[in-house]
Image (cartoon, rainbow over all chains, first blue to last red; front, side, top):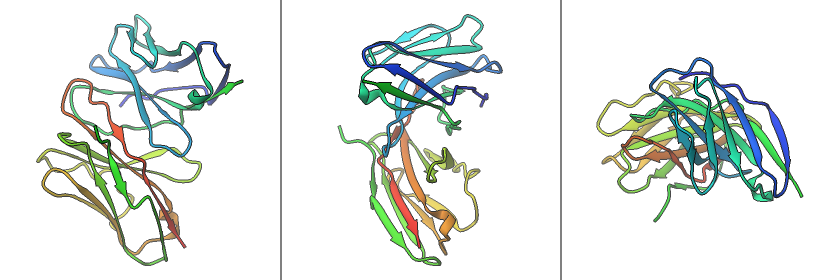
Amino acid sequence: DAKTTQPPSMDCAEGRAANLPCNHSTISGNEYVYWYRQIHSQGPQYIIHGLKNNETNEMASLIITEDRKSSTLILPHATLRDTAVYYCIVRVGSSASKIIFGSGTRLSIRP
Amino acid sequence: GAGVSQSPSNKVTEKGKDVELRCDPISGHTALYWYRQSLGQGLEFLIYFQGNSAPDKSGLPSDRFSAERTGGSVSTLTIQRTQQEDSAVYLCASSRRGQSNEQFFGPGTRLTVL
């Protein structure tokens, strides 16, 4: 799996958009970008994934650059419950495979 | 529907004892994964099962660790002769065969070795 680079921590005001960056410059053509988050004392939770097109679901939006070397997870209206560690992962999506978690970004939401 | 369940939620044991941790995946999910997370550390892959294929054991830290998946459903992670460094939260996840392959995680078992 390709290595990803994320800032160790970020903060955002409640109600504002939280934009979490991720670099994955060595991504291969068949690898997807996945985002998970882990709220304190809980198991990780899947958020969203994409290959090359931008994706949106009820939780977030994923913006992938045209060269696919970086991406941004957007939480459009952050709430206190979004405080968590966010993991950007690159892996082949067509078959089951282990997730290699990095250190992620610790996002703190300010009231 | 029901998510991934794990039992026990907490386990305290003495150094040198054996422990068994159980995972019930989401019904119909063909892949099952074990990870662990030590205090203040990241998530570490241990082992995964995919259908009838041989499991990927590449993350098991020593031969004291083993896992089984019976009938393609429930899995048991066994740690023999536990050591204090085995103390961690052990997380199980499952996924369904398909293009997205997102993994659904259980709440974890917190293991404390005294």
